[in-house]
Image (cartoon, rainbow, N blue to C red; front, side, top):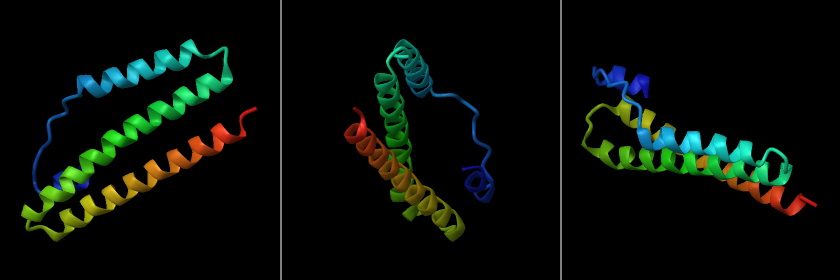
Length: 105
């Protein structure tokens, strides 16, 4: 994203999303709450990783749709690459989750 802002010569605000920050804080609390049960703790970690990755994927999907209005091909490519990476990460988290669920005793 920093490269995209640079290419567009835009200074982005360093505002932190209270929603995402709350989700991350909730995730640590939930994970800590299940620290005595490794399976529930691990599933909580996987659940929250998937939730956060879903937000990132949706964000890049919207940016990619909006990029048709941008004339800068470098920015379009960076957005496309980020979206593809995010989709791949989301798939990886799903595969790890499935493998974990089916191999837990």
